[in-house]
Image 1 (cartoon, helix red, strand yellow):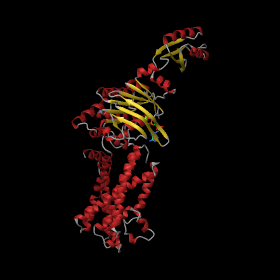
Image 2: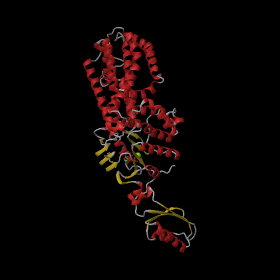
Image 3: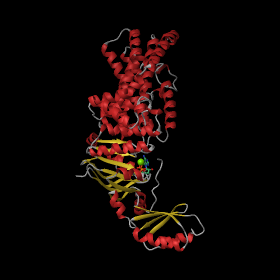
Image 4: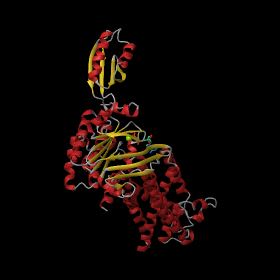
Length: 253
Length: 319
Ligand SMILES: Nc1ncnc2c1ncn2[C@@H]1O[C@H](COP(=O)(O)OP(=O)(O)O)[C@@H](O)[C@H]1O
Ligand SMILES: [Mg+2]
């Protein structure tokens, strides 16, 4: 356990000293919610509490950001030659993998702590269990998104540039075509099926359901749980596969 | 028991055959140098022993432990200094070494003093708080080597430990590697520099195209070469110093081969210098070519490499 903490901290301390980017994200969240969210919620008539709906969507986007950052980080390690060093240390592969996941988890926890607190204060009416459920959902989503980035490295492993281009491009599509900002039923019929392909749709709707939104505008939670679980499990598999290819000497982006 | 033992070790990267059935052993507590040109498979072998790379087939054991079956156990007794140190752009040397020492189990009470001693010894102390990305090539190499000198593993692997380092630095690094051996560690060094090999090796394995060509002590390798002596000649420039003379020199009885080593300079591999030199001087006297100097030396590892592989080892004489 000591080793895992050491590994996590070795890298994390450089991200957190100083923690400017996290604080900037908090400020962005507050401003977006306070101005844009408040204004737009007066225009949106279909949802009674659009500001809160929007707040959760924003947190889901942050989760996506951290998840994809963590996944890309892992791939870049492999590319830059840091992973061979880590692989040479007297720790098991599973501990190494765990330390990378843990680092992403800690970054996610820090990032969403303040926004989530503000959102909960806004909603006001929630139970302890529903909050725990929402947090778990966000972590599973983040982990799954990291896996998505690992998966992409197999498609684009020839070049780091192609990899970056694809992940950036795909990220914006995944966010736009999802229920992060509006419910599925409000989407134009031609977009709705595409939104069902975005993992954010499942994460956002499940969190909203847990925090007491009207189920009639949300996806069936059974699907959401199933999709998110499948995504997280495939992350584990892809992470191991990437390590495996590395020890076989296959260069990946 | 051997410290390292490989049997019919094969590694392919797609179509590239990096190791082609390597049989290789290292005795405990000795420095084994792998000498071979770029691309001969040195790094591949080292990475397999460090359990970072999987062999395609064959077996490799470190201290009796199989790389495929007990990789974590092997990593607990082994340390590797990579050919290229990369990937810690935002870290500082002191911080990297503290992390390495801690994760490799150097007791907390000893870390600070050890790190200071090694960093000062390798002239890194001044740069201890620079960012890794601002270090020079030579400094990153010293840092990479320092990791093992602090860790002091039972089995230490150095991949080109002094490339890009100046001569003074090379001497320091070599001295430190000797010290580590004297404390009882087994050491494996890969290099393409003859001087490094001569300085460090208890034994040398010559590697060429993924195969071990020969393995022995430096002394025995040199004795094994037919034409055990090397004579270097420097002639006065002049009309009598001609191509015909060169041919006549190479016809002298006992000449194994004779190559032009520079302007008016020849390097001859001969079987017995005592017999060859008088014949050579009288030939030069007859042909009225004046000898400026004659030097009898023993063959270098360059000659050994040439002899066993038929190829010239391209060395980087950057120091
Ligand atoms: N990851 C890799 N992918 C493909 N080919 C590789 C890889 N690593 C090394 N090679 C090839 O394998 C051969 C041996 O390389 P290497 O072990 O690095 O030799 P050395 O360390 O002696 O220079 C070379 O032909 C090299 O190009
Ligand atoms: Mg090499």
